[in-house]
Image (cartoon, rainbow over all chains, first blue to last red; front, top):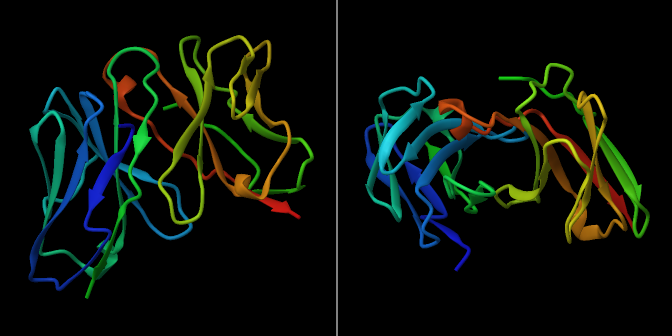
Amino acid sequence: DTEVTQTPKHLVMGMTNKKSLKCEQHMGHRAMYWYKQKAKKPPELMFVYSYEKLSINESVPSRFSPECPNSSLLNLHLHALQPEDSALYLCASRHLQGNRELFFGEGSRLTVL
Amino acid sequence: DAKTTQPNSMESNEEEPVHLPCNHSTISGTDYIHWYRQLPSQGPEYVIHGLTSNVNNRMASLAIAEDRKSSTLILHRATLRDAAVYYCILRPASGGSNYKLTFGKGTLLTVNP
């Protein structure tokens, strides 16, 4: 299994809603990432988890709240988002040793109304 | 983070070789050179990486200049499926920033039939 699975694929939410994005991998990777990608722009790093602990937060607003409940799962909790937060949210994972190639999911496309 | 510079776009014909350049004049001695690509409507995927020597894999070849200030990703026979944005990324070898993978603007490759 060499997949990173993201759900949902599409999400539409209002500015007062609370929703979550989910990412799952079963490759034994102990580093997991959230990236945000706006249209025709490169992915921007948001968070990195290493051994289920938050190791990097790229000054992301607190309305985005990551969670890594176990080594296979990564969540991104969303609350009080703004329309400018509409984007493709990409999850990635990798081994902490060896090749360290990042495996990406297909992303969750978020629209904030 | 050390920066990379790539052409915004390149064009190729199907079944011809493609050479995608990347300049990284501020590369440090321990930075790895990684290449990823992003096909339309998909998450990025790993292509190849190297440190000093040229590298080959089933997808591509990576040619690294002797002074390491530039590199070239070589697709030996472009296919329509190779049309994508190609990202050249420098990854530090050690320390906390090792966990980061910071994407630049990339090169949009168009493959003509």
